[in-house]
Image (tube, rainbow, N blue to C red; front, side, top):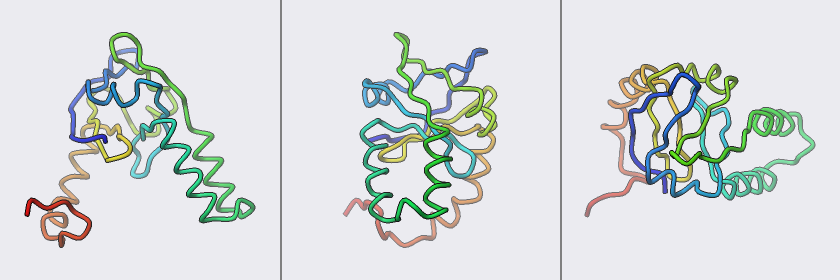
Length: 144
């Protein structure tokens, strides 16, 4: 499970050193793709297969929407392996899509992680935090 928020930096070559725990989870490789709200999703190969099976079961493959989702989703996916230092190189296309330059935040979101521009992440948190604090606990883990 991917957990936590980690403030990190891209180097001049667009490389990102993943948090140690995340490196363990993607030891077999990672798939990066465009995410919602202009971030980059990082998924295991197994998770990509699960998502595709669920999507195929929920939506006929011959609809325009399914074709568009498959084209944009799979078309933007990149398979990577971390180097010996635990770094992955984010392709320029994905860095541009998410506005990633230097300061980033890597956020664990259960079955995936997300890579955000640090300023965009801060703005997103500021916008969402009040609603989160006021929300009911539906679907949320509790300590009781």
